[in-house]
Length: 167
Image (cartoon, rainbow, N blue to C red; front, side):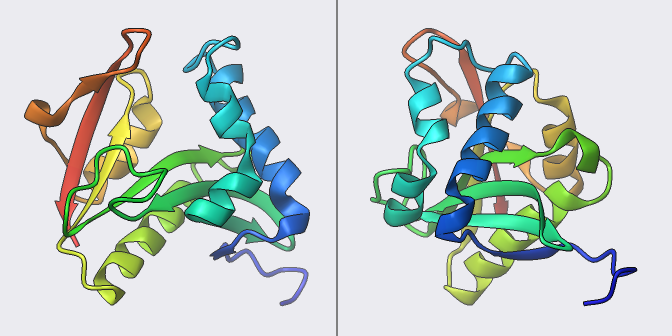
């Protein structure tokens, strides 16, 4: 890869990146006001090592700079909140502010779609929050549709929106 290479590379997280992914994810969710700092969910967002052991954490990097991350959860695993049989779920999409609008989030979601097809899943599902407008634009552009009958609430009563698309 050359100095002028602007491609975003998607790959599994390395152990040496756990702290950086945790910081990015917490900054995205708490720092941007999507999750309250005292929410128990913050511990999940910050525990990249556990996510990597129980699920699959992907990162987006360019010239070794971490730009984004998300977690893939297969049905029946600890990080699968909504995945049913035949569905692959992803969660905790986080993109660094400096990388927004550069296709990082789209590249991460496309990697999930590729994984779903490669592994024979029928569909990909996700949960998002009503105020995550930039993420929702990515999802809609990639063909995800709102499935209102599957919407749910956090223990603190925050409404969550479920979206799905065929793999």
